[in-house]
Image (cartoon, rainbow, N blue to C red):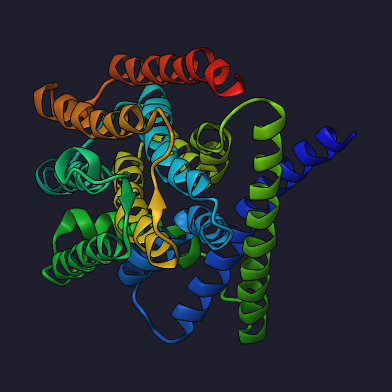
Length: 338
């Protein structure tokens, strides 16, 4: 009975977190419009933050409780899920065309983010340390990278780059087309969103921890799979819808931007709250998968015809993810259970 209760807790936590992020984005976007903030700025900040808010909420909750394995697994797992499943599904629905800025700046920046985490998390190899850990200083470095990324984003927007301008405006189109809600309603939506993110993330972490212990799985495996997939639902919905409507800019921009945001900002904030120890035996594999994801996207877009990710390449991404999850569950779960 207790096992079923915690499964329910995990599922309801995921659902509440996803819905709460939508309320938060709706309320914040309407509030921003009332203060005459442009669609461009809203698309590049509030909407981008909204799709990553479930990961942020879960990581803050996990870090404050000392559950660093879930915090790390959630970010690495989300980034892996974003590329192999979300971008893979988007490409299968409709080939994803990539703009030059994404090919030469944003995708390499997401690769840099994965490499930086790999360096920071390998203290034993690089420094001869006793443990692999992202310290608070490492976390501050990640946040500094995030500041640079945000500066680049706003500089590109202000310079009038058409790719970035169209991406942000299309991302925010659903908010621009509707009638603005009253000020009090915006405040209620923001409040509901924040409260929902808090309780949803708390229940998600608690349910995941219980299932991990009872099922003989480590916290990191649960974080890399169930929690990561759950917190990535907003990105999946956004990218799949964008691909269906043939707005491939949004599909690729959503995934790449989210991956950069996850590592530089969310992992940075989590590391400032509590040092993140890489204790999972799969840590190196997980980081290598994160790096491989960016390498494959860069390779497909650079070498493919017309700078796009084809349906076949999208299928390859999905198959690789299935193999990765099979490896986690079949090879590592029995070891952990022993």
